[in-house]
Image (tube, rainbow, N blue to C red; front, side, top):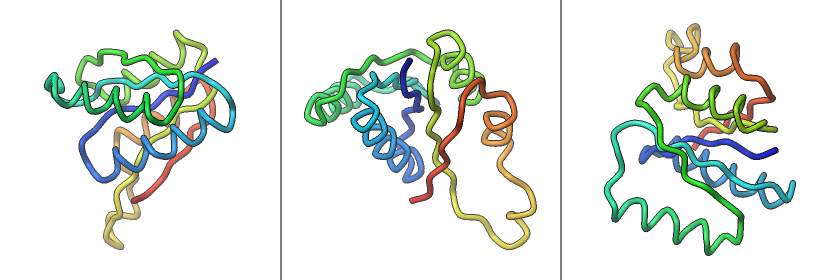
Length: 119
């Protein structure tokens, strides 16, 4: 069992990582960080690994395919994820009528609970 989160360089992605680290600590579970979006540079990966090492959580970086929703759901299913953590961005009143398509796919297809956080 593990906590699954995507690694995105957005405010929403950073907030999801903070929440996922907190959940991993509280539950005493490893953290699976799915490399989402464009391939991170070696400097970005080094910074991420250093941050996770400093946080004191067991972790593993999982390469993604570019489809964040699919990558998170697949990783959670294959690795018996106990929780997926995602970041949501703020929306306009009209935008609130429609949840982001990636977030919606994760919520509908996830094999485990999903924690959605906002920056």
